[in-house]
Length: 394
Image (cartoon, rainbow, N blue to C red):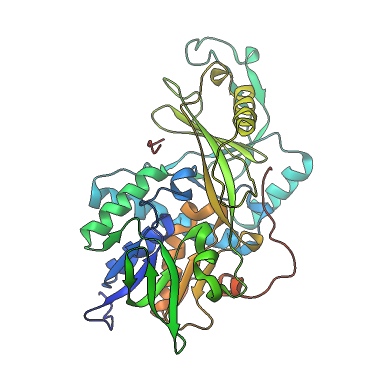
């Protein structure tokens, strides 16, 4: 049954940020019977959520804190039903598919750590040779001895989603549920009094509601201003390339250290990614283009003589140890945050929305959420950033 919210005239919730986290949170609140206005400084789904690849797993789980993997595994367990429901409701297929993940050229230490982690978490993993050749599509009689062979560990349960389509489905779902979406509305200040947010100063004037949720990704700490306390969410640029082949020679995601190839069902192939601490600079670079294209071409010869269709970047919301903050503000009683997911906003979106909704309505959580409430506290060490130093539906 829908929850009975207190507000009658004002919106029950104002959600700030229309990326995957804000869209999912808004849809979940609307489904629970709340009235919601979603504010976006740019256009819906046009920042990091659109720019990412849609791999529904951490790369690589044994390199991350247990709290990151716990949220990731919970969230990905929700994906099959969630995306199927969105397709039925909106007519848009987010292309959720279990495609598997090949980890290329793991050394002995990587293999041991991977097997130990997978055994402890009941996740399937096995050695699996990968055969790649540029003639594979046109010369099916070519023997495997003539092809490039790569030693890999294969995780067959890893899935992917086509994030631009997921974003579009969520926007339509919010409209169906009569949520209000206000684009090109930048929040410049949160006004407060008596330990509560009283309204938002925006480029479209004053906007008020009963409760407020910050889901502004890399801009979250900046937006909160004095109310950010010790929260440290900062932008980390990631650049990617997009290719198109008549048919993809791979069906699974390939990952090697910080880089990966993601095949789409229609022959598009995404190549990522860089990890660059450049502030709010979203410019793409020739250096990154060469780095990514050389790696992809060496791995998949079919791409060597193919020019990328697009080259873009997104600003990921990095946080301490990659642990997002999903909680009520420690001082302002009607303010919440759902941000700091770094590479895994798309992966963690449905799970993050569910646990924040549980906190708002004081419902039992699926596991302890205390790790996602620590972002307001000071940390001694600098955040650890994983990895190496427009809008088509790829």
